[in-house]
Structure formats: structure tokens, C-alpha cells
Length: 443
Image (cartoon, rainbow, N blue to C red):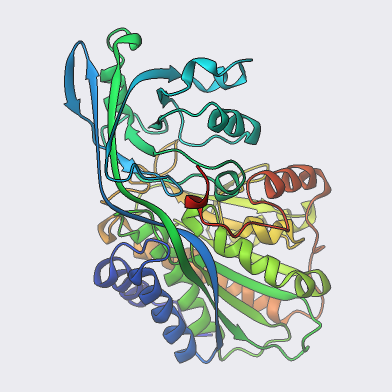
């Protein structure tokens, strides 16, 4: 088997993050990234197909937020959250109500009607809380990125299933440090003026699939290697997730000439940054095949930070978990192994379809990566030698699994994780029915 080439990893990352740049779902740049991935997979000898799907695309021409404290208005940097409504280019002014996340459990939301809600969180995971919030009809939602106590501006998104069911109001994300300063005085003195020109419009994204067929035919379990080629707004996404796409393309190149009993399917998903919309669309479209064949998925997402440590998120039978840990440890690729279910990555919809596997991630601070969804997620943040060693270990693992006469472990999603998987799949992804209406269709 050929060696994983760090220079090739860098070349792929630079093309995606520098030559193309930010690759927002549904944009021309995301489509250009999909074409690049398809061309490189084809050059590796894979059978390539593209699967487009409908999305609600973030199309924001401009946004501004100012907030009043102690009688003085000041500009506050903000990023319109994907799934948000616009304000029609008009300025919306309202007094501010501050909500801490536990207060979403309270009996009445009546006091927020017509107000701008300053909510101290980035995601509302409980669908009932989101439903009640929307039914209360606030004028705007100002979310605070509590994950990183800095003045850095990040982008993020609402859960499309929630927006589809319950609608949306104009919604932005602001940095922690700005909220901290705003709340230095009495919160009842706060007011906000928000203007969003644009919002969410119907769009199209694409999943790119490349297949290296195995000799055992179309009934044998599949090996999946996955990543995503889109980014959050304004981010070049070198780590999130040009790094994962580069790994996928290098794995396809080195595994192409290797004899295989089992088929390896490489998928670069679109619209991951709206909560794995592309991966969910894929498993819905291929549900019958996935149930009939099963398999294993290795997902690469944001794993390239030059300083930090690897996290592996396994959704595996205990014997498979132990096998994976032994395999990577033996190659010097030590990681922390997270317990439980993570719905914030493209492997999750495949787990919902019954496909076990793991997600490779690398963080550089206790909350994740300090450049998460930022403008400075650039190639200078990556360690291509670090990436090369982990991708090499996975090339050896995939080669062994593709050639083995029998699987060395049970291909099962753990029973103790199934309830959480089903809950997230239904609540956050819309289940097997899914959703198709653009977010702008309601409210």
C-alpha cells in the first residue's frame, strides 16, 4: 500500500480553504468544493456519483446589531444563525429579556412576547423548549456563545427539524465577552436593534460518493469513510472540515490499488453545518441498502489541529471498541474515547440507520478548538504530520477490514445507546420522515 502523503493532505486543504474559501451550504463555493472532491475521487479510480438534495440555504447580504445599556447604544458584532428569518432589511427594536438555559423549563413564557431574548446558549436541544419559545413570538433571538469566553465571533445554525416544525424568528449569535460587558448593569435596562437583510431561502446541496468495489459483491457489508465539504458562514474551514475531506481523498488514493473483499464507499457530505442534513438525506435515500448490508463507518471531522489531542467518539459493540483502541494504540495513535452518543457529526445518521463506527476529532482546549467556526480556521492551524499519522493508521485499519475473511468484531450499534440515538434522530433530525420545507416558509 502506498504511503499517505502529507504534501497531498496540505494541497487538498489549501485548495478547499484558500482557493475556494468559505463553502456555505447551497453556495457556488460549496458546489465548487463538491466538484473538486468528485474529480479527485474519480482520479483515484473510484466510481463516482453525486446526490443533490434540497436545503434551506443561508443567504444573508448584511446584518447589524446594536444594544442599549445605561442609555447608550453600542454596536455588537453578530453572525446570523443558519435557519434564521431576516427582518426584511428593516430594523427591529425591542427591550431585552435575559434567559439562562435552566429558565427554559419555567411554566410561562408570556413575558418574552415581542421582546428580544438574550439566551445564554448556542443550541436549544430540547424540542419542547424551542416550540414554546417560538409560540411566545419574541421579536428576535440573540444567542450567546457560552462555550468560549472570548470576543471572537463565530457562526452556527438552528436545528432544521425544529425550524421546519415550529418556525424561526430573526436569530443571531454574539461573542461571550460582549454579553459579559452588556450584563455589567441591570438587565432590565437592555434593548436591542437588529437588522438582517436576507435570511433563509430554498437551495440545493450535494453529497459526493466514490466507491471502490470489493470482490464479495453487492451483498457484503460496506466500509464507509465520510467527511463534509461545507463550512459555517465566513469561515475558510481548513480544519472544519477541509482536513476531513483531505483524509478521505488520500485514503481513496492509497486504498484504490489494494485487493478488497469488501466495498469501500467514500462520501463527502454537503450541509453538515446545519446538523448533518446531507448525511441524513443520504441514509433516508439508502435506508433499504443500509439495513440489508450493514457495515462500518469512520468519520473524519475537524481532526487536524497542530496542537492538541485526539478524541474518538465510538458507537460500537464493546468488542469492536476494544479492537479499535488496540489497533490505534499499537500504531501510536492514542486518543481519549468518549462515552455516549454525539449527534453533531456525520456518522450519527448512519448510526441511526444501524451502522456502527467512530468519529475522529482533535481538540486543542477543553471546550473543543479555540478557532471553532471562525474566520481564522486556516491552514496555519493544522499539523499535517499529525494528520498523516492518524490517516495512515486508518489506511491500515481499512485495508485489514476490507481484506478480512470475517469481521473481527460484531457489527452492531450498542443496545444501551439505541434509546438516545432514536431520541436525537426523531427530535433533532425529523426521523425517517425528515423535512423538506425551507426555513423561510414559517413565521
